[in-house]
Length: 141
Image 1 (cartoon, helix red, strand yellow):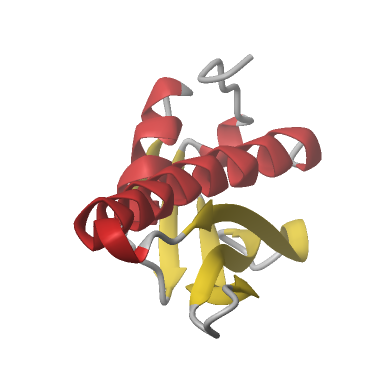
Image 2: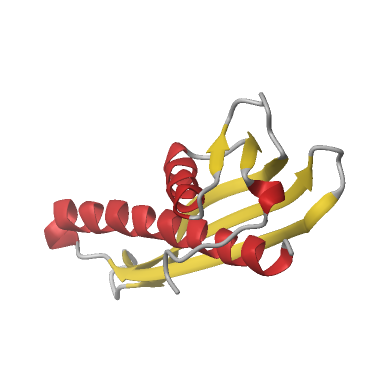
C-alpha cells in the first residue's frame, strides 16, 4: 500500500496553505504526484485546498541518568489539517495527527546522536506526509 495513492478528481490540483515545513511539503508533493495529482503553494486553478493549521515538531526528555543528565528523548510531531474544495465545502474535516519516536542520548557520542535526531525528524516528516495521504484517501470519496 505504501506509495500506491489514489485521490478523487476534486484533488487533482490541490493548493497547500498555512504554515508548514519545506520537508513536509516536498513529501506531500511527491505523494500527490504518485497519485497523478499536483500539490502547489500557488492558487491558480486549484480544485481544492489542503490547509495546514499546525505543523510542530519538538523533543522532550523521557528519562535521565543517575547524574541528572538526559538519557532518552522523545521526538513528537503534531500536524492539524483539513481539506476544502474550490467552493469552500469541507472534503476532509479538520483533524490532528501525532507521531512520536524515542531515542537514547549518549553524551560520549554527541555527533552521532545529533545525526540520529536529524534522521528521525526527516523520517517523522515523511511518515506524517504518508499518514495525511492515508487520511485524505480514506475520507475524500
